[in-house]
Length: 156
Image (cartoon, rainbow, N blue to C red; front, side, top):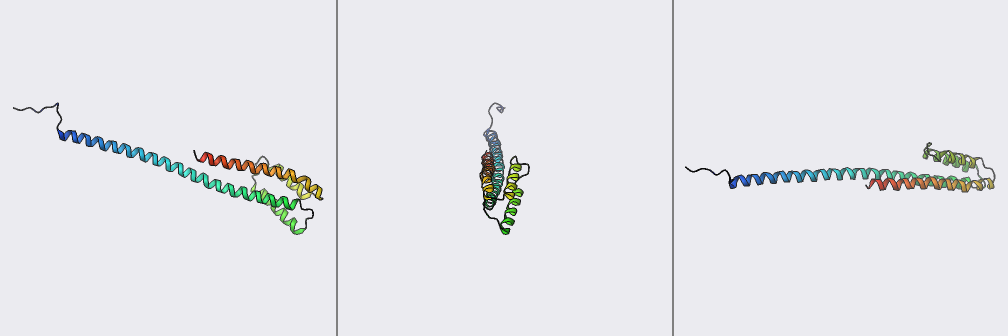
């Protein structure tokens, strides 16, 4: 009687085992790649979201800067007629609406805008000019730095 050898696996069993290991390895590799793709997609979506917010912030900064410049140009104008006065008031209101009332510089900005409004002489207006411009530059610089920081953080 012949006995089957238990110690030596048949070629079919070895091929089956190798095939099974290949399937498991392939599934593991596919799963790892899928997880990495999901993570990359999540990072890309976050970056796109931050980029869109940055675009909105940049437009807001540009709008605020342009409005501040127009306000200052009329505010320092030596003679203000009724049409300029209406535009001046409109620009002041627009700045207030563009700014966040909780901003640390809001009260200073609001105050100096009203000082411009009530200034009567060219000297009074010119004396406000430097303070207004520096205050606006500080606000715009801070917001520009925040925009750059948000973009830098979005890239991580």
